[in-house]
Image (cartoon, rainbow, N blue to C red; front, side):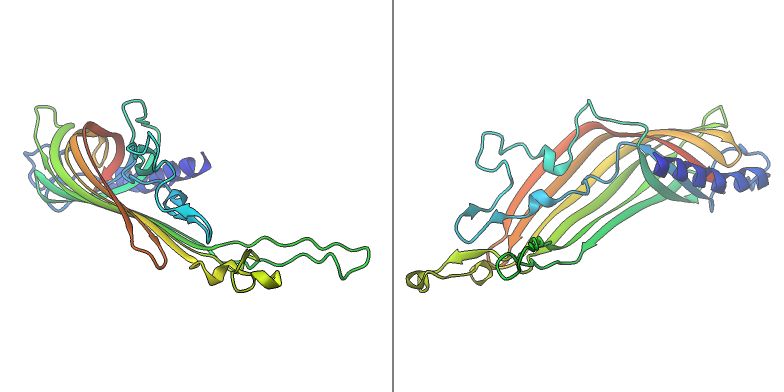
Length: 295
């Protein structure tokens, strides 16, 4: 909630100077003063269904196995629900289209009075350094028990997306109303890479079994695991802007039809990649509300 309020406040601070200081922006005295014109920039705060198709948690992409057993695949692999990838791909239905979620900011440039190109992007990177396992001290100390310290995997998460498109604006009898249609293409990649440190886990070894000794699991098990998802999307866009003042507007937009291709890859170190793909076609996708300014 605090993050959303700060974003709205920052947007208001950016919008206010433009609204107060703008006196025209129309090169031709006979044209509509509220309409966009060639050479103008437009920045919008987008509210609604996210343009980032993947969430921030990709732990399901890490292969789960050890030196004795395990298999490579998604958690619901090999079950009756294995064909349903919606939870991993963050695919939503008609019952989940929030219009109060803040997505980010979109930039748009008008290279013609009726044509504009737009761009939006985002990135989220997280890095966790490793921590080795430290064994407990119980036997050598009198009346003192030092517990062990659990290990933490070294892990890097990165999640980024970029969308670009072109819009065609239309004039109406009301100079404050500006409908538009367009197309957009986008790409997103979510990747997680983890490496196991010293874990203290010991396993049986055939050569040492007669001696009653064990060996570290890391001797048999590669420590690195990687998983990633890649999405490619193309969609038609339709929307309408309403100019509140010269330079400030409110817009409603959606994608009447969209197509998305997803590729899931799981890569345990030392083994072949495990690949899955998914196709999704949706009508009436990504309804959003935009609050923006133009200068």
